[in-house]
Length: 236
Ligand SMILES: [Zn+2]
Image 1 (cartoon, rainbow, N blue to C red):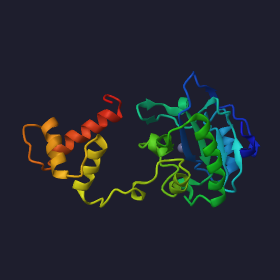
Image 2 (tube, rainbow, N blue to C red):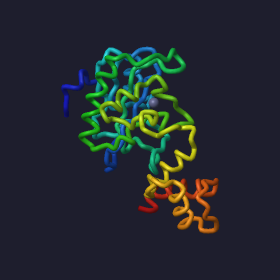
Image 3 (cartoon, protein in one colour):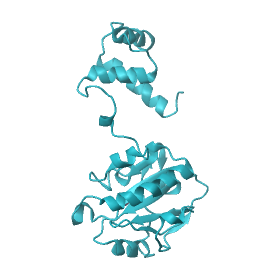
Image 4 (cartoon, helix red, strand yellow):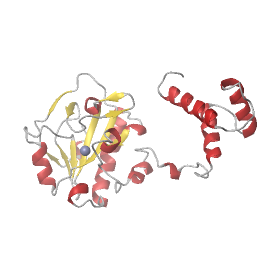
């Protein structure tokens, strides 16, 4: 499958079957080791019981370790959007980088240039939502910090391969809390061209005990809860 994007095969024994779970996520990692060879060796060591589908060296070489249809062991204890243990539904890509304990450094251009077409092909093949292209730290925040703050998410976002950072969106003044509330209210469904009236309408429906058009803590909490419930699929 799209072998022109893969430069080398180094089969790892560290995988099992996916058990029918559809692939719907990509998890990006750094290797946390001094060299790519060291990382490859570890991911091929049966005793280590870790692997990933791909490793991309700092020079931009793409090494395949586990076929995509198999379940590689990269995420460990993890959680994302209602699903625990994401290995069964994800593809794992390791990026060579010494990591925070061994001299964390920027990801070279060549490495990201190799990642982008591979990721684009994966996202397209499995129709993976942008919100499901994540870092290891996103799905295991208590244990992990890779690929870390130097990872250029904005380059991926340029190709529509992950969610863009909010500061690139038109959110208005982030310190204007009322502005943020109105945007959330609009997202929920209300026409906010007359903000005060929109808040009154919202109160009339959801907090009829006090209809004053003022954005108080209770009103914020109610809207927040409504949006959370809808995002969780409890409402639609
Ligand atoms: Zn990781």
